[in-house]
Image 1 (cartoon, helix red, strand yellow):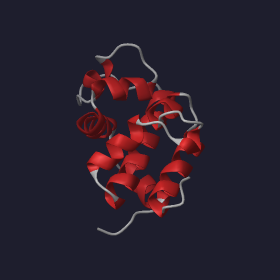
Image 2: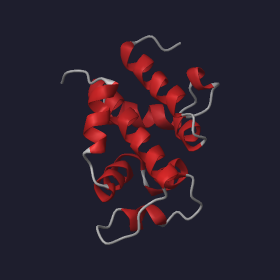
Image 3: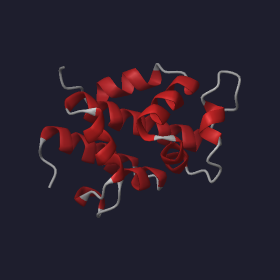
Image 4: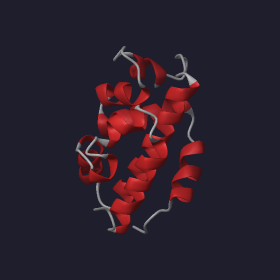
Length: 125
């Protein structure tokens, strides 16, 4: 499968409606991780967001979820779902040893996307 760019992942992500975006993230990372990414304490919210008739996340939370999806697609396309999951939950030297999951929750989106891009390019230290 060809490697995607951040532009490609952006185009794919913005075309997803919110329930589908949340469904995909839950299937890859799990409900608790999606709630953490979104910065919400209620671990049941992602399951509500994935329903077509459910509530929608706040704008800040939605942006974090979109950024997570972009990073996920970038890494999973170049590597594998297993590698992408490990990348999201493991400490990352490009993020001061924080997990990308936590860095996204903390609104460090540019750093996380740059770290994902560097990982795929093989330039991550």
